[in-house]
Image 1 (cartoon, one colour):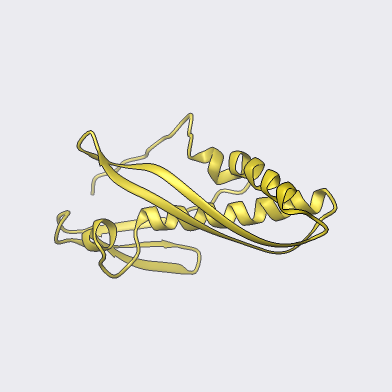
Image 2 (cartoon, rainbow, N blue to C red; image 1 turned 60 degrees about the vertical axis):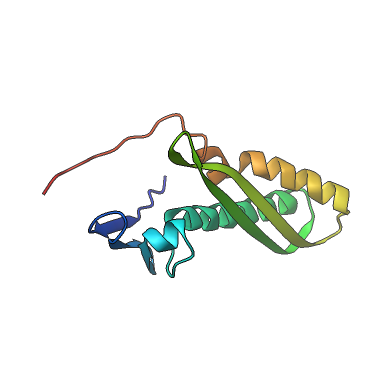
Length: 139
């Protein structure tokens, strides 16, 4: 099975520090402002949303094709809601909006496929993790 990796580095304290997030050919800067305000750069929640939207689009296209439909284009937008809950920042909701260009299907059937995909794409399932491990080192 495939193992994917990403890296993050943070320099400095929470409010004034800055860092980079990277994987594959992507590397982006992040900061307190890009994460909790409207500052420039990316943030972990935005990348989680991109991963979810990408996974969802591929999984929905695959499911449609398996059943004989012609998925020409599936575009998904993911909105991650990050709010303070019990004095901790928490992802409380994810809204997926999907637009499809699919041959041979009606809107009601497309919506049923989308709902099934919401429950079953890899990233959707990962957001309800049964096990998580961490390997920590101090240098």
